[in-house]
Length: 328
Image (cartoon, rainbow, N blue to C red; front, side):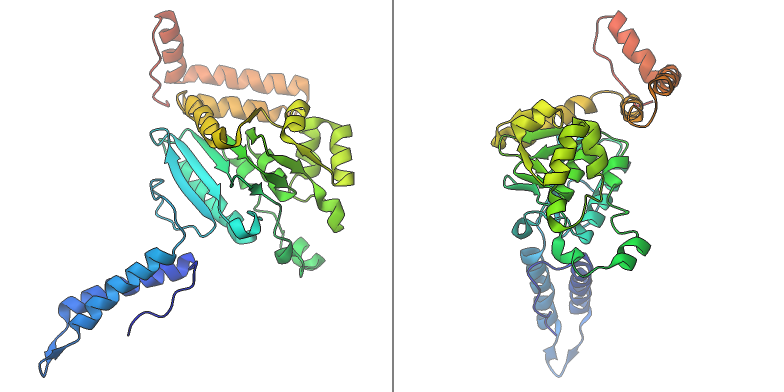
């Protein structure tokens, strides 16, 4: 039979089923017997490409240059800068990129793929020009109760972005509210478009931030300003966020992603093990006392002397040439 109608955005599971149908139909067409002068081959041969055409027309559009072979429903995934920078774009435009559970699982999967890619040295995470992520999906949360969220460890897997060892750069245009602001703060560097808006408005919904808003925001901009934003639900624009230390740079909206990729490309040119050490050491400043942090930094500094890249970097400097790192 011909394939059934396909929904506008088939799930990855349905997409795989359709691909299998197309492959089986094509095989059957080649082997179909002729009985009483009639063969089923033409019908099967028509069904196979029809299934494929329907699949390609309705599947979420994404580049497969990342090479992980996975189809994402809520993300667009690509690689830039000679495949040294991973690019992940949140893609729920009708919901202003609200963070649903399925999207966050896909994000973790995409980050895992880039983490395992030896050529990728940094990853850029962005949304649309209108919205980075307008918050968590309220409709998804509404029916849950205490037992659901506590025993099920709701939001427990949302912090994958914070544990990626490769540098993660958030390129924020438009709304970064609630969970969207928390996701941006999980990244190592935040670049903001001139139209960016940040905030933690959970208090207006009768709850509090649950993915790091009360903690990372306080570390980023200080207790007084963080307390004001969390307790009032007020928002701040990109310029205010830069002055407060929440973002590194504010750039025109249409240049934002390119600027973030440029930063990622510069990072990717350095030794990946050494970049990972530097990132780890900076992050420890949030967790350790100054004395403990200095000791931790010293140990990682000493550890860098066990790498070939440390020797290459210093030799290149002494010889007045560019280093050629091997990530070893």
